Amino acid sequence: MTDQTQPLSELQPQPLKYGEREIEEGTLTTFPNPRPGRDYTITITLPEYTCKCPFSGYPDFATLTLTYTPAQKVVELKAIKLYINGYRDRYISHEEAVNQIMDDFVAAVQPHKATLIGDYNPRGNVHTVVEVQYP
Image 1 (cartoon, rainbow, N blue to C red):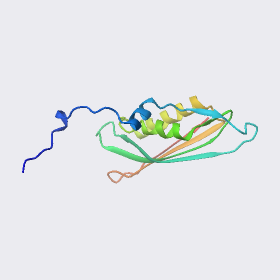
Image 2 (cartoon, rainbow, N blue to C red):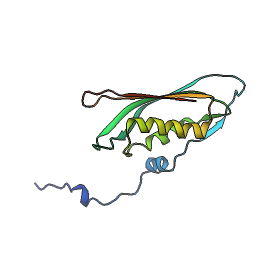
Image 3 (cartoon, helix red, strand yellow):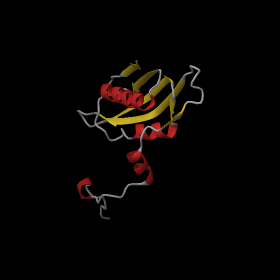
Image 4 (cartoon, one colour):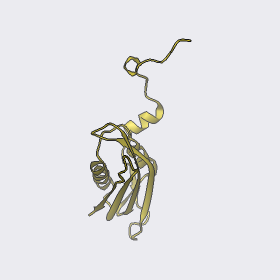
């Protein structure tokens, strides 16, 4: 029997699948807050966040929890899912990722206030939680 596997360097690039195209084209889409005169809280949990360590290249996994009080806009859930999935192949530190996500979220949604927690899975006996607040 012959081995039919190829080294990664010899594999032909494949066209993007529809989900990969959606992730690549994704933006933080918003819609009007249905109750702009009332303060209320929205909590979004994203348990499948992943990126790559900028030093080792190893994958990092986390649960992101975003809690915010909307002003005039609310983030669309599929849009935030696709935006977060865009980090999958990025080499980015835990600290930079959580801060960049918050910056992008605030720019798109302009909430009254927001908190983002990145609870990273332990790797090498180290557990990291990064929390950022706006304002």
